[in-house]
Image (cartoon, rainbow, N blue to C red; front, side, top):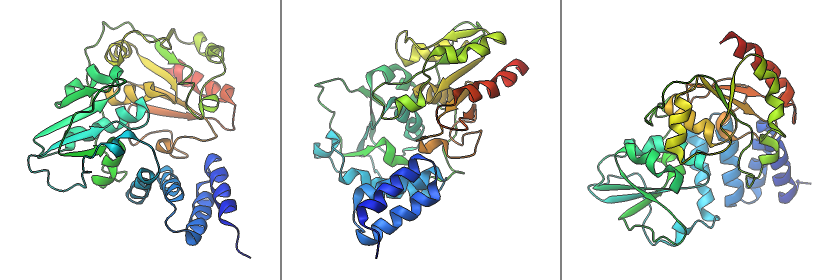
Amino acid sequence: MAEEFGALVERGIRAAHAMDFPTAERAYLAALAQRPDNAPVISALGLVLLAQGRYREGFLLYEARKAFDRDPINQSGMPEWQGDDLAGRSLLVWREQGLGDEIQMARYVPQIRGAGEVILVCSPPLERLFSGLGVRVFPLTDGAAVPRADLHVRNLSLPALFETTLETIPPAPYLTAPADAKTGGVGFVWRGNPDHPNDAGRSLPSPEVLAPLQEVAELVDLQTPRGDFLDTAARIQALDLVITVDTAMAHLAGALGVPCWVMLPAWRTDWRWMTGRTDSPWYPSLKLYRQPKPGDWESVVAAMKPDLAAR
């Protein structure tokens, strides 16, 4: 007797969270054999393929998210750009998901050719940082009217439109910021947005977890924001290194080319960090340190300490 659709989906979710992506893929494919048009499962399968580095397939499947999400761009009435010749038409690039996603996908904006105007919609803290991309930047505040354009595209749809593979990711660094005077030291961020669905897993329980690193380096607390992301960019460029959990700070450092070590959880690791790698194809200046098991940040810090001392 065939396994029920709901059981297959649940098995896929559990396997994906545990980073057993081959098992998750098999479960989702079996579920789709029963319901081929189920957009949430198609989208989930896309994320599983992305985590395995299969970007051409994964990003195309991830487009299925647009069939069931409640993004307000769906009600804009603007046609969606399908990658065809823009021929002088205006294009609105819509922000999607978190600040880190916005920073990661900003690399594609300079790749857009032929538009009469490109309007990049972003979160307000990113407005000044994105001003160097050579397009009109529109910070979307509560209640603000979205600018009109001939076409729109979501920022996370750009990798599919540009047929991105591991080898063709637009390179970093691609953002710039005025640098503060060099101060040295190692900046750290120990927790992310508490509203993130896996924040309890990706954030440290306390900054004290990093205490062993103070024996070999001067640590500078970057947790409390001072100004917007351009101000933060100036701060981190004055440091020798940034150490952070999986937050927008990792993307900011990578987009600027700042050396950064990222501490990754063993459960529900984000797709963009893949598996088994200590480097990132998205950001050459990043080094990845992974938990050997969920909750074991002490092993991560123990692995970083001799590397930090060697610097």
